[in-house]
Length: 457
Image 1 (cartoon, rainbow, N blue to C red):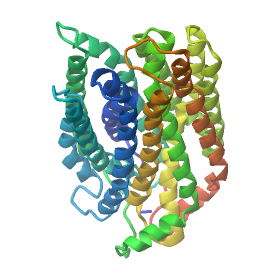
Image 2 (tube, rainbow, N blue to C red):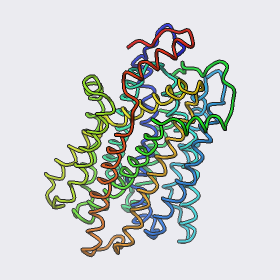
Image 3 (tube, helix red, strand yellow):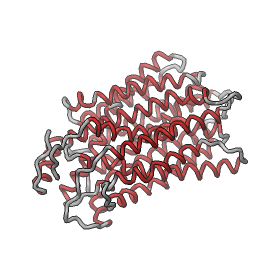
Image 4 (tube, one colour):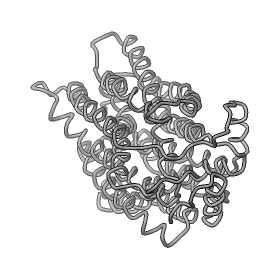
């Protein structure tokens, strides 16, 4: 690929890129962990209707992601292809995320309409900023090692955002609820803070990153050819299914956590500390990514770590909800094992973009990453929707004592079901055949084609 005088990324640039995912996770994790609960227990919506909302709108909007990826691939500005989208979308992203939790005093039918409208617009804003943001990693450096390091920074920062949301939101929504102790006020004021901070972080990402990898000079725009090449990219197709399964796991377990602690454990406030410990272990795992990748191949690591994560999640089903020490042990094991996996898998996505250029002579980084995001959003939507559907199926009633059947349903949502999705993701990686020697050869071949230097190891 095209060489630059110094093709190793600096700490400042890696950190600036990582802050973009901190900003994304201020909303992504707030929705994942608390949106179903907010809609049922605070906003007063029916759980089954919430399930349909959390399924239908993300899946519909998910098909916008490849469109944004194709448009970003064809964007040409002095700032590059992907960075301008971050600049243009940051403020709408911040405003719409706040409006989702504004809690207007309207009728029950009006509340459902309001939820549909604000959630849909927010998903669109999220797609327009996060899809190009993800693709940006594929063009910041031509080196797979550098991209793995960049991905590590990204997900250490991402799960710092996750930690802050999971830990602080339960506390802030109580602290900022006002004299009447209204949790709706608490949610609204909390999201106002995170909205302002996230917009500022996106601006910092835009200002302190650079695009270095360019598409082949003679590449002509062809939507049909890009889509055909994507369908022939075997390694990417495997990761497409992995993305779906991973996010179904995340959506299901993340959203079920507050129900589990409120109704099964009987102490809702403990979810904050439980999340804090899990996210800290996740971050430690993410920071250990380089240690692992120096010793084992990324494919092998993905298989082993994902299966261990599945055991940690699913194993909680066999633990008494009152046995908090054992729940913490399982959470620590599963969270640490999951820590390196996002950094690894996103570096693999970048490798599949190189593979596509190497095999077909064309580069479609935006389409590669945006189609992956489509799979993630469909998986997340199905996982999140299952919460509302299964709560309704098991007879859940918001803010009331639950029947044993409802408690069993909540336990399944938090343990065995997400554990099964994680296990299937680990098994799917067996079919990923792009190994490290081949990745190095692809880098060398692409550099030779463009007359550049081979990326430094």
